[in-house]
Length: 637
Image (cartoon, rainbow, N blue to C red):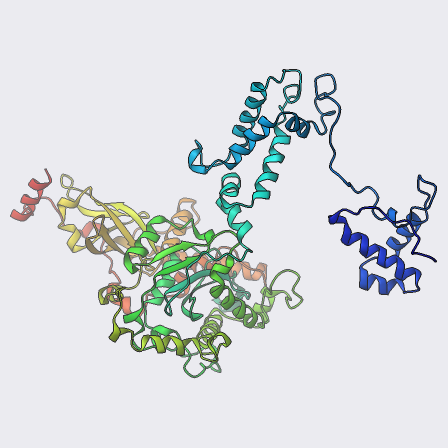
């Protein structure tokens, strides 16, 4: 076949040229004897598509010759459509007949085009609103046409929408052509601008000058499921847990894990955010592995707070980057953390995960290691390694304690692994080299004070409360939260503080709350009174107990321990679920694991309150006024 004289198209549009040359080459190779499967591999053209274009190649063109290679480029627009007929009420009906009328209108009335372009190019500060409103541009467009004398029977006044849709497309194309940040921000907003620039070469974020100057915080669900072993009525039951979340704080340079926290919640909260920072300021100590005795740390493994001498004394975090889906965290939490640690918090921008690349890369390595467990959830539903994660956790009895120890070893060993970007040094070596002389040399940014380090743990929640009480009724000052009263010997004598708003710093043990006045002065710790002081529990557990009691599902007397009643109720519920649905996850159980299996830490034993029945609170009536209290009362008036 003589292909040299086959008819060819005069012009092929630029966007159609790759497809034209690919199909043309495939046909030539097919006619030269190449097998269809080889053509499919090289050019991506199947046997059916070859037959289709071969039939079109030999079809008859209107000039009497075969179409040839012109058939591949048929129906391609060589030049844009330009309307020549008039655009008036006689030729246009709503819904049809207006093709090309907008461009024709702009050609005939250059003042209308100038009005549109002037509104697009107007700086944001000169507009009434920072955003670029299409409606305002449309009004400018119509005003220019009225000034030019366009009658009401001509386009766009003869249409129902006054050419609004055509104008909107024109404005979008103009903004895309300009590729200027100001125009795109005005039209689409800051989030779209971040996404459009996310894959560009422009880098506007800060870079760390010294190790641990900038850190990244993020949270991800563990790619594995654990289990809880229950003993109920002499029967041993294994119940799979919900997926937990791992919260990590990683320094940008070097890429070193500074602190982490394993959250039982399926959806993390600000409490996990604060607990991670509490672990940052708590000296790390090596674990004794009891659930998996064969685990061991690598030499020099650990976290900087326990391995690097002087780390906490010289630590000066200047900036913490967190994901922008955490912007729902309470402002009070973020403001408190800024005030306590003197750092700045920067929320990540849309589709710009590279600003937190350090923590994302650490999560990637942890994902690879944890995915080797039999109960792994893999990287997604299509992962071939996933084989019934929850039943596998029950079958192999992968317990919560084992997962904790495994994560501890993985995180600690990560900091001791030589890194290529550090020229073979481990992250802990780089941190130790920097902090070896930081205390002696000093710094313009002061380190954390010992008072702040000794005042741990950080709160897991922050809310506003008001000091209540009544001198007339003899109720000493107290605060009320979650259907319980809190007081202390210091607060009971502070009659002048009744009605004062305060900030409550919630602890993991909800029996103790720290009070701070709005001016920053501390009122110390207050303890819960009544039967809530008998057993360790967190705020989520107390709210669940109150909900069950209000629904009539959990009954207890005022002299009973509500937490122990809740434990018995929850144990029965989990055991019934394990018998009825073996290998199935019981939803909503993880958030109460701290109360069900944990006790208060040893260092908080001194803060554990004893039961103080409300009937035994000091009586404020009759003969208890002193000169100091009387003077305080007068000052209050």
